[in-house]
Image (cartoon, rainbow, N blue to C red):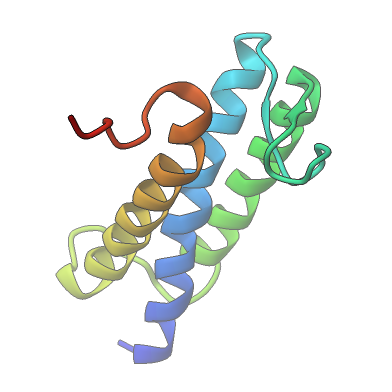
Length: 109
């Protein structure tokens, strides 16, 4: 096992997680924030743009996970960086998109 493969496995998890909200919003026909909106990352992009962006993220994730090294989900050393990438991007998305979709921190009383 080459430890240099851990970096692409981590980012494979990142790109896979980023694919989900964009692709799902696009398939549902709903606009969603994307890097192509104005203002960037805050404005809404069309459902078509989000399907394409989500699919692009899915392809990049596939390339990073399955085309670099010999990824095996049953091997803990491969699964851990992949899972950490998913967790890191999930938390980042929750923070960034939460303020637009009602998931921001609750107000203190």
